[in-house]
Image 1 (tube, rainbow, N blue to C red):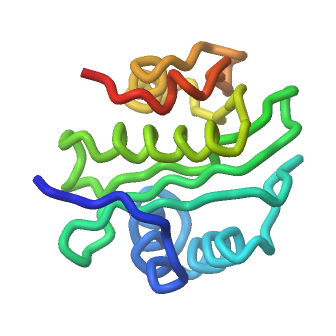
Image 2 (image 1 turned 135 degrees about the vertical axis):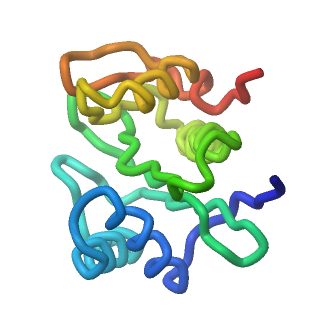
Length: 155
């Protein structure tokens, strides 16, 4: 499967919201939340302005996305806010490529320690993060002590 990882724009918000709403919430909820985040008008707890959102684009169709920002939460430099891939497009390496790209953004912006909130029961996400170098911070959080490991492709 060929796909392109590129910066998200406002035209991608609907597709990102639809991907998120399949698992939790409504399309309208996510359109508002993601749209405001992308415009820099929604700030998760302890978030700071620098942020990035990337999409996985398969011939004009958004099939996944990842977002991150600078933070002060848990003494981290950055936080992975969201990463999600359309159910039917999972298991093709899209999440790993999105994670690597947002990791590159963290490195480019000198944000080294990166945290992510992850449900203790979300074994697939925990495996993905661990595969890319994250370790357990506490029951609900994992951390990359150096974003370089996050940005490295896994073979």
